[in-house]
Image 1 (cartoon, rainbow, N blue to C red):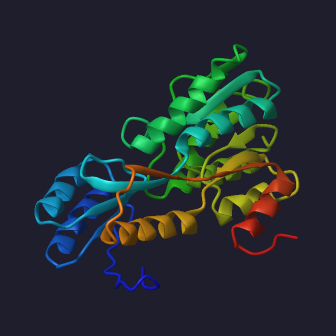
Image 2 (cartoon, helix red, strand yellow):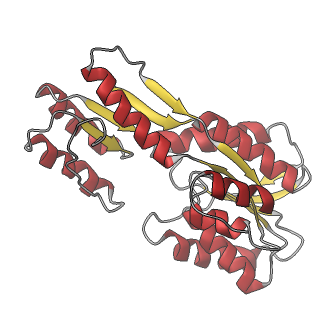
Length: 268
């Protein structure tokens, strides 16, 4: 934004959807020229409307909205279908899979990712998704997922569980891996989505049960949204959605390569 001549007025929702929504009131009263809003549930919609009613254009990230000029987002359709294929490959096309899927019905991107993962699994009749699905907490997700995974392992002894998938993001997968290592159950494969530096580091470890992910490009998403704001003010007509490419990650060597490619450093 600053390179394009703008000044950033930051607010932080602290991973709390209500705080995130209320922060838009601050922006409404700050005489900003445009708002870029990242994620959020339905609670942000009336805030977006109030901004638009005041003549302030809204741009979103990972949140399609009728009030948004443009939504910049990863290709969540590709993410969901790709992780489905990678997970199926990792377990040989058959087996029993548990899934952490708390947000499929709450966040649009989670619905796309989880829905496409399930759609792909229809082509694998020998893969069974264990019911009920697990629901991770948003706050302190790794520790919550660690405890719930330990409970899951106590119910499904060795030979009865082949993989654990985190359907929308990957912070819970950190705790899943910790639980598998703690219980000596690293034969269970772990897959997830987003592939930030912390989870890429886990995939890159020798013998890691975390075998596949799909990496977003967070810097590029933010850059794209800022550039779209500039294009809007320059009089260009924007499409409602701008999709940013994602990068599949299957195994240790790909994790190392993508870690370096995204500018996180070197794992060699």
